[in-house]
Structures are given as C-alpha cells and as structure tokens.
Image 1 (cartoon, one colour):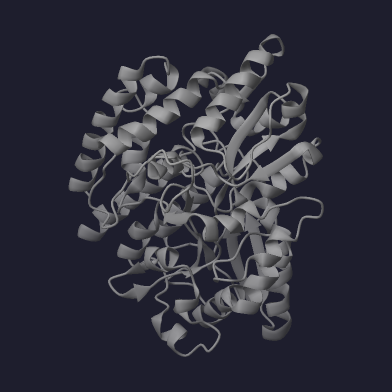
Image 2: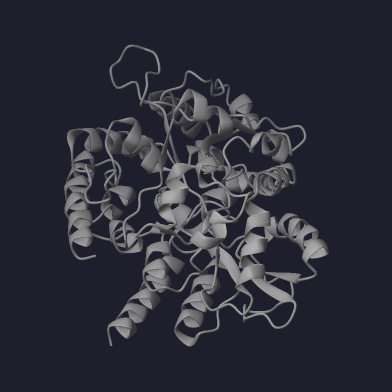
Length: 460
C-alpha cells in the first residue's frame, strides 16, 4: 500500500511537471505555463516513433524531448552502436507527453531503457526505486569520475548516497537582444557594464519609441523562472530556495528589492496577456520585442530564425546593490540546471544501458556533444566547443558568466512543481504580473510566496 501511494504521488508530480517549464534541453515557449524553457516547441515525434517501451534483443529505446538535439545525440549513439553491436533508437516525445508516458511506464512497468531526468521530478523517481542504481557501474568505469561534473547536477541525481543519473549537460542564462531594433530606435546596445536598471531604462526608451508599431523594449514570460526572475532575485541577495532546500528568503527585504526590479521592468514590457497568447520567443522573433533573457538550450532556435543575424547575446546584467558603480561578487548571478542520463531499474539490458550512458557522459562524448552544438556539457571544461559550434555568432556570454559572475543551481525541493505551480496563480504572483503598476501588490506577493513555499516544503 505504501508503494502504491508513492506511485500515485509520482504520477501527480509528473502530471504537474508537464505544465512547468524546465530549462536545459528544451525547445521553445513552454506550452501553457513556461515560455523559453518550455519544452515542446521543438519537440515532435521522431526517431523510430516508438513511445518508449522496453528494448528487445539488441536494441535500446531512448526517450528525449528536444528534437533539436536528436541528430547530434543519435550520431554519438551510433558511434557506440558500432562498437557494441546494440542499436539505439532515440525517440523524441513532446514535453507534456514525455512525463505522462514516463509516469504511466513507471506504474505499468514499461519504461524506456534510457532517458533524461530533470530536477522537477528526479527525487520522486529515485525514492521509488524506478531508476537503475549506477554506483557499482561507476566504480568500475575508468571513463566516469563524478568529480569532473558540475556539483549541483551530481547532487541532484544522488539519493541516500547512491547515484541514479550522470549529468548530461548544464546551461546558463544570457541577455538576448535584437540589434536591429536598438539601432532603429536609436538606443545604445547592452554592454558588460549594464545593470538591471540599465535594462529598465533601455526597455522604456524602446517601448516609447515603438508604441505606434506595437514594439516593446522587453518581454517577460514570468513562468520562465530559471531564465527570468530567479536571476534578478538572486542578484539582490535573496534565494527562492535556501541551500539546504528547507526554506526560502523570497519574502525578505532583499527578495522584495529583487522583485521590485522585476516589477519595474514589467511596466515597460509586453503586457502579460499578450505574452500568454504568443510567448516571448514568438514575440521576439516577430521583431516586436527588443530584449529577453534566455538559456543556452535555446541558441539553435534563434540561430536558425529568419532574422537570426540581428540577434545578439550579452552577459547577464547585474544588480548594483551597494551602489558603487561596479559589479561585485554575488551581484551578477545565473541559474544553471542540468539534465541527467538515467536508465530504467527494470530495463532488459542494464549493462548496455549503462554503457550507452557512459559513452554519452564520458569526456569524449561530452566534447562531441558540444562540438555538434547539441548543448553545453555537464562535464566541467568541455563546453568551449559549443560556443564555437555556431558560425557568425558570439555565444561567449554563456561561458563567461561562469568566470565573471556566480552560478547558482536552479532552486528545487523534493516536490518542486507543487510550489512552482501555486506561485503562478492568484494569491501568488499572478496579480502583480498582470498589474505591475501597483508596487504594493508585488510586496504582498513576496510575503505570500514565502508562506506558499514554506508550507509546501513542510508537507513534502
């Protein structure tokens, strides 16, 4: 009975996760809830078309949700197949369907052999022993040393001292701007010295100048927390989730200062009703928005866009909290997240499943992934090739932030989607998102958010 209750809870968590934005490896506006991290714009059924049933004979079924990554990952998998003799079918499933299928498979015993894990749901899958425990494999594998991967991602996929997934990638956030619109309206383009106040001022100028044409200086899909307001909140000294994953400081003075900055930017940004209808990515590529923040997982979307030559990436702005006119430590932060390669606990060929994961996550595999422009690596120091994988575009903002700023891991708890979902609704941040002119609404929402998160954690 206990296990059944856990599986039911897992199904609920996965269902809620389907509506949430995820970051890292997603494709475009995140469906109904989260734009940029969103995870379905580029995801169409691909590969063999298999929904992810267990492998038979010499085949492994692999599920992912980002069609942009499929070809590169298949090329890497084919290298492994040539050596192992085991065929790999990589199936692309839309974000919503991905978690529905995985949850159904978990309850019915038919999961894909190898698949991506995400911070939203990893804890539930690990606690229910649904993922293959990798400890013994890792101990015997000269190609894998967990010390070589980003610590936050390693820790995410570790439960009770055991490793259940190996980091596939990591991502960072940058400021994306339309250089042509800045020139059109005579506004100076972003520099490394920009603060969030500079963003606000530039957005205000573009919004005023572009009023007749329906152009705004900035667009915020507030559901895109990882590539959006999380970063500003952290810049001002607060934490959505504290380092011990047991609390929040979102209702503190620092938290309210950060969210006040978000509110100011919203006053000169595309109205939330429009963002909800079209999504920030579509608005930006339609030349109706001057700036947005986005993650490294979205580079290909903009690189291949019709007006991609006009799109430039800049270092994330900072918060000049102490007013000394320079960026000090902790004032420029970027959230980062990372997917993990995991295998089903009851896959028919666990040795082959792990061997494939090892191939993907080895230093050579991670560098190949970067060279092919799939994503940045989960293996530290292996992402430089990704920055050079897209000819004619400067992507250095994504790697420079690691040296010129501070990374913080995407906030999560045992059941992240519960409180993330409530924060988007009435009684959370919905009212100030929709009515940014009212500063009191935002302050009150921060107090409410403090209670929402604390209560959710207490009930996990």
